[in-house]
Image (cartoon, rainbow, N blue to C red; front, top):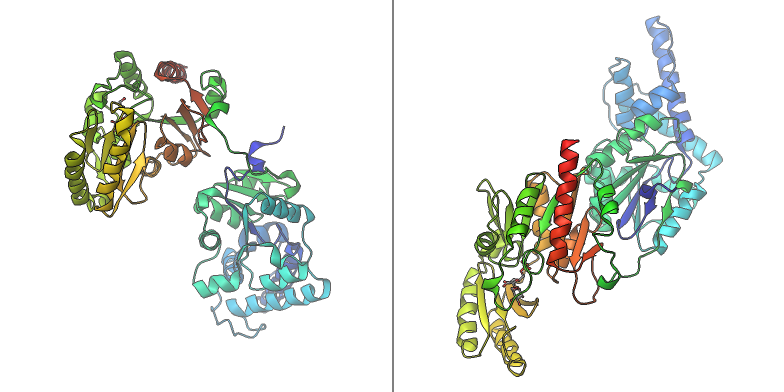
Length: 524
Ligand SMILES: O=P(O)(O)OC[C@H]1O[C@H](O[C@H]2O[C@H](CO)[C@@H](O)[C@H](O)[C@H]2O)[C@H](O)[C@@H](O)[C@@H]1O
C-alpha cells in the first residue's frame, strides 16, 4: 500500500520546495568530486609541510557530514574544524590558491565549473514528472540551493523555467540570510511563493537540508537518500525515499458537500486510527452542537448528560467551547469548569486557570458596536419577535420569531445601522444577522491561536472540531488537513468537515464514545 505521506494533495499542501543538487539536478557527484580534489590537494600539501601522514577527504563520511548542502565557505570551515585545522577567513576575492577559507572555497568552485562545462548537468526524470504533476494540481513549486552556481546548473539541465520561485546562494547572500541547517532559505522561498511553511512540502537529499526543514516548521519533509544515509535523513525527515518516483500527486479534489459526509459514529474506527499514538484537543461549538436550536437564545440549555460528558472529556484532553455567543453568557449556560471558552466568535477567550485574551484590535470597535446596538434597538424594538442580543464583540439580531412578512424590515434596519457604522460588517447564521468588527478574526483564527498558546500546535496532537453553522466552517477549514472536522448537519452545502452527525443526540453519543476510548487508553 502507498505510504499516505507520499501522496501530495492540494487539500493538504499549497507548495513544494525542492533542493536543487541531488533532488532536481544530478550534480552531487560533480560537487563531491570537486570538494575531494580541492581538499585532497590542500591536505596533502599541509601534511607534507608538517611531516605528518596525509589523510584524504572521504566522500562517504566527510562530504555528507560537513559539506553537503551547505554554503561553500561554511562547508570549508566546518570540514577543517572537524580536522582541527584553523585558517584565516580571507575574502571572497581571494585567489583560488590562497590558503584561506574563502581561497579554498574558490578553488573548489573553480574545479566545479571545469567539470560542469565539460559534462553539463542533467535532471532527474522522476523529479521533473512530479513537478509537472504538481503544476497540474495547482500546487506551487520553488527551487532552493546553497550554490552560487545554481542558475548555471539549472540552465545546463534545462529546468530553469520549471519553478514559480528560486532562492539560491546568490539570493541568500543578497538577503543576508544564513545557509542550512538554518531554515531561512526555505522560509524565504515560502515567502516568495506566498505560502505558509506548514502548508508546504520540502524535498531534500542533505542532512543539513532536512534539519532546516524541521526547524522551519514545514508541513512535510521528504528526504531523498542518494548516498546511503537513510538513518541520518530520517532523524529530521518525516519520510525518506530512494527516488521521487515513489511520490504521487493527487489531483485537485472535488468540492465536498454536507450530504456526502460519512457518519462520525459509523467511522469511529477510522477516527480512532487517526488518534493512534496521538492525543486529541477538542473544540466544541455551543448552539446547534451541544444544545438543540430553540426559539429564544436564552433558553438554549445544555442537558445534564451532555454537560457531564464534556466534563469527563476534560479529564482526558484539552477542551474548549468556541461560540458566537458572548463569552460570559456561554460560560454561564454551559456551566462546565476546567475548560476553555472562546466567545464572540473567538474575540474573547478565557481559560480554566483565569487566563484571559481579548483580540486587541477588536477593542477599537467597541464604540461602533455600542452605537449600532442603540440604533438596532431604536429600529427593531417595535417589530414583534425581533431580538437584539449584544455580545461584547458582536451583535446578533434574531428573527426566528418574526413573522415572515416582517423579516425584510429586520434586514433593512440592520443594513441602515451598518451603513452609519463603518468598520462593522454583516454576517449570517441560523435565523440571525450579525454585526461584527470587519477584521480578519474568526473562530478558525481563535482555534489556531489557542493551539499555539497551549503548545498543542504539534504533530502528536489532533484537533477535533464539532460545529453546525456557517461560522464554524472557518474553524473546520483551519483544521482540515491536520485535524478531524465534524459537522452537525442540516442543509446541504459545501463544507470543510470530514464527518457528520445528525443532531445533538448523536453529538452526545459521539463524545461519550470518544470519552470511553480515551478512558480505555488511559487505563491500558
Ligand atoms: O457559535 P454558536 O455557539 O453556535 O453560536 C451561534 C449563535 O447561536 C445563538 O443563536 C442560535 O441559537 C439560538 C438558540 O438555539 C437560536 O434561537 C438562533 O436562531 C440561532 O441563530 C446565539 O444566540 C448567537 O449569539 C450565536 O451567534
